[in-house]
Amino acid sequence: AASSKAKPKKASRCVTREQLIAKKIADNFKGFPSECIDVKVVAGLTLRQTLLRDYQLHLDGKEPRALGQQYYDKLRAAFRPPLSASAAGVKVAVARVAPPRPGHLGGQAPAPRQGALGRMDANRERHQPVGVLRLDAFLAWAKSSMHETIGMAMEAARMIARLKLHEKFQDEFKALKPWLDEALEVALTRSRSAHTDDKQFCALNADVLQLLLPAADLRMVLAHTGTYVTIVEPLTRLVSAAGVGLKLFSSWVQSVLGDRVQVMIDGMVQDFFRGARSAEEYLEAQVRCQAAVDGIGCIDLLPSKRTISLTYRGQKIAVAVRSTQEQVQLSFACALKGLGAARQQLELLWVETFLVGDNPPIVHECELPDALFAPAAAARRRVRQAMLDSGAATGDLVQLHVQKILSDLLVLDSTFKVEVGMITELCGEGTGERMKSLVLACLPAPARRVPPETAAQSLNRLTSGEAFKLAERTLQERVKLIQSYVNSLAMLQAPDLTAALGQPWLADIINYFQYFLVGETPPVFVVGKTAIDAMLSAAQLATTAKTSTLAQVHIFKAYRWLLTDDQWARAAAVIDSTEHRLSNDFGESMKKRPRRSGKASAAASSGDADQAMQACLDLFK
Image (cartoon, rainbow, N blue to C red; front, side):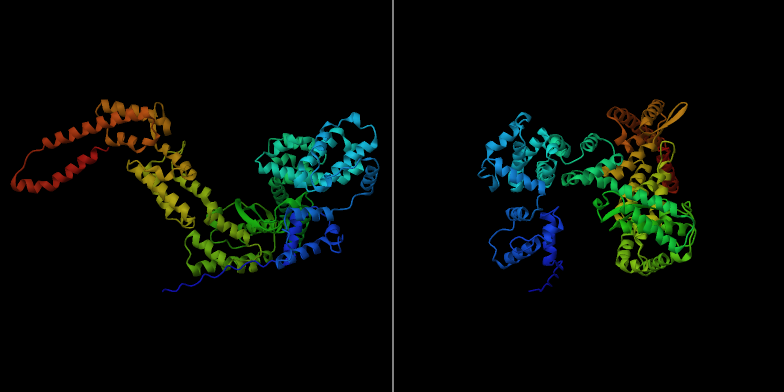
């Protein structure tokens, strides 16, 4: 039997017990202060120690309980932050005036009581003990499992909002806010699981949300329909007010926070690159910029790992960053390298000419010492030599070899990600729009007349150039497909467009094929689909006058996909009439040839063949 090598096992990521417990705390005890996690002691252990003990018992098979929702509910109830002095006084007051409430501490409040909350009105709130009792009832329900008593908690919250108890008992309500916040987060999670829109959730629970979130900001954000850039400040206040606000609007803030950070960095970069600067000032400017970024509200909501857009010598490139610190560093480096390359203080990357052109404008006016460009110059020399040694000629191979030596390049230049962004933009998927513009430059446009033969020659030059070879392989195949379509049109043959179905990139370019059509409507020429009627009219007149040619009528076959049914009916009649007439004319001309025999016929056969071929070619003029 043939022996097969066993595949090497994928190295698993080692996670310590402490790391696992830290993740469990982050997932199940969000919002708990550090005092409740590592200081408060229950049954001789802190929360962290309790989790470590129970986890170890579970691994050893000595813990029969499942470490699931009920387990964490009991721990949350045991290790919650202590109530304030005023809230503790509430419990004393309730103990004096409230009747016994059997069963409600077990996690599910009696159903009649839940209905009573909705029937309470301001007329019954004549004595303070009654109001205190209502708050304590909500407090007891909230301390139970939120997943079991979420309906009761929301009903009690609506009662508080309706009777404005949060204004009359401010200290007591302050103690209730964490549990109310948790109840709303659970309700939001359930709403999203039911595929309910967040705005609809806010509309249904507006009275309760206003207990925790600024009412004016909430109304403004929900009524807003444009870009989030104009409501950054209200969004920031909402996500900072409560956990439910963070859960509702964090994605909204993140969508504009990245742009806001980059705009601030770009502004400080522009301010720095004016006048002569030293290497020390270059580093100090980055420190000041980082301090300004850290001062932006809710900056911690910005994902640490993300992709940003930088501008290198007028061209957009995408760069992956791991923190705002790296974003600041790369933004300054991008401007620095662009200035150095434009002023010949830094040698060009070998792909740079294809990306930014020969002579792009200098964006910054600044004098900088050559020492600042030394790391970038060393890394660029290293990657150029690697490309020469590997013989990489296509974009796929270039990206592969750059990734192989990327760790070495980052040692030479910690900001080499800027060059990686350039290479990816030129050789990867990012080059699609640029290649589209190069292809469209070969084709006609509404204001530019280009015959198919000329377009075919231009595309041939494009596909034999270096920029095309560096493009992604899939993109190369698309360009070659466009080239085959144009070659077919140049020979008056209908291209097979089935391969382009469902591909927007190809469809956008094919839409320009219509401008190969040019029709005359005195005193002007028309192009595109609007020229078809004029071309049909001219072909019909020529057919009537018996002067139409195959080239004049077969063009409608080549561009059949552009014609309507009525236009194609007219074109088919013209094509049939012209082909029939020219076939008859050719037959008549062959009959009128003088007959030869013997040696004279053999001697003239070669010349007759040439004349016959020329007669066939004349039919297409």
